[in-house]
Length: 114
Image (tube, rainbow, N blue to C red):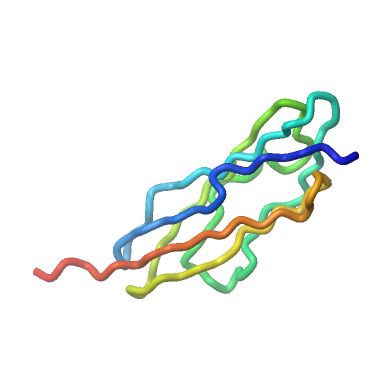
């Protein structure tokens, strides 16, 4: 039986004014198994051409996730236009239920009028 991984939060929502970037939001992966490690091959965005989203740090998650341990990947949203933008975070791993997918959404808002 493959080890179980928990992912929190279940979705990521980011918001920023056009021309700025949101604060980083963390996605935390936890190996819920007590004895077996999880191999995480990659964490990517389903639509890499959506340049508004970026992965700032996922290096701690790539490789082996030991039993009972957690790692985090951070994401930012830098909108170029005022609109909602959906995407999906894809996690390639060997845990039960793989591959894993997390919805990410960004809302770009117009700058305040002066």
